[in-house]
Image (cartoon, rainbow, N blue to C red; front, side):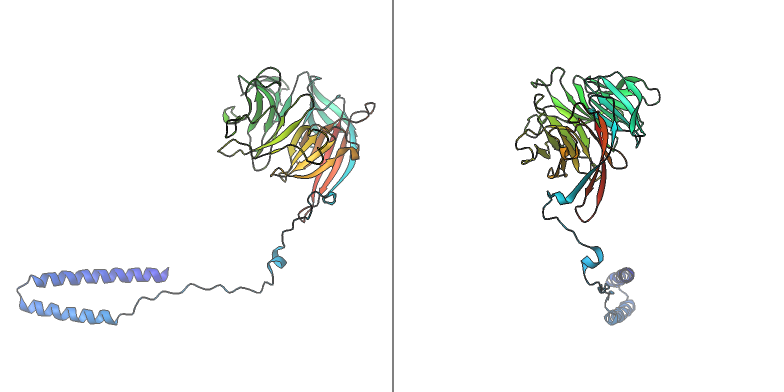
Length: 394
């Protein structure tokens, strides 16, 4: 830059000198004074000789990079490694740790408040409870007589409740009362609700009446915290409906939306649909219909889903399985829960510490419903990821 600035200044001085000489020559061309003409001619000859003696422009060269003595890239930074078989059982280890009892006949939905408290619900039983864990048992802190099909916490600590109405209900943390919220999807009714890490409220909605046969639009709608609609998923790029019954919704850290879409009430068959929350086409990114081997003899019957801190998706399958998917919709592991005395896993949620809670049903109807802890270690990609699975069994 110094060299360039110097040359710019020198060029400007040369321009000014040439302009002065040009003006002098123009004057003597029009002049009748012989002495002035010969004097200017002599000065011009001297100026030309001086210009020829000037040093030509020269810029400084850019410095060259000389590499050091690093032996290999891998020795300094390490390397990437892909396991030969991502479905092998050696990549995952599980172990049951602890169990609690609950009073509900079925835990259909649950939301973690903190490490010691959570909301649980049972739709057909018209029960919503806030429970606390203490000395190996659960204590009911508060109970409400409502019919919640889905629940979700907002940042204020208030609880959003989908009760199959056009507007979500809201349970105030401060007053403990339930009122109708400003979050609505009229003329449709809400069937599922989820709150994202980016403070967006996502609602699954359909027409009023029985879920099947389909007699109206089935939509997933994104609202802001003021209740205004920001985006709606309904039809794909070819104009075909995307959903049959969007029963459960979750999102990952990249703001992708995953919807559990129920296809049949009779056998619980369903699928997982991945959506992008970016602007553009609303067509699904991918669809997961179950594992070709694990679900070979029975329908894929998903009941709930949740995303991990590593953006994997865990899906509870009513065939005594947990499906673990990556962001591309690939099943990276199947957990057969019966091996751990876990039957019919249902609702899922992960708290801030990475603990996953699973609502399920115990095989022996004479056994009490309870809460179990399951430890999950993922040993893939040269690192260890620990997730604690807490199991609520009714």
